[in-house]
Image (cartoon, rainbow, N blue to C red):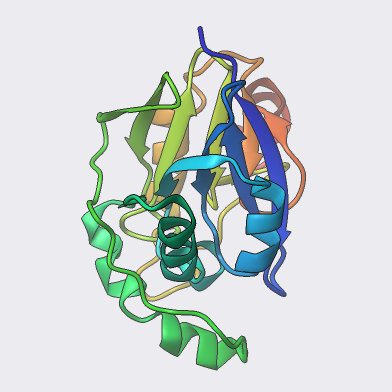
Length: 216
């Protein structure tokens, strides 16, 4: 097993948790760089970034991805791919500037990923396998990344401490979200740490026992 370390970097006025995964060799992956790219670069502190991962297409998760990619490629002198989410969120990635205008948040850009992902894929990054699960409902193309060896789930806006993601959008689906969480997340071991898109981490066991949206 390759140990990976997770650093939470809250970004944007919405305080979205960008996560930096890194290993002992000074290599990293950035998950959901929603904005405040200068802060993210400062936390990277010269690490070599292999990829930028996106869980879904909302502005606070993806609005800084294009700028971060440009900065890293200039710094590293090599391509840094943007990977994810599922293609069904492409319409959101192409409307980030409109989303940002509605929230009054400057400096965000639309995103064209280098490739989308599908549920069931396995990404090999930082010497580690990250398993992709498609968990729609908050958005149609939302994915989560599961690191079985390091007992960690990068959940985006699917599962939170004591609650689940919003579904009060025209494209939201509360039943699909709960079904996806039960199918792909609650089947994981109790000690798996859930890194949420907002707020503090939790565990699968805690949410299985106490989350009112998931208790049958």
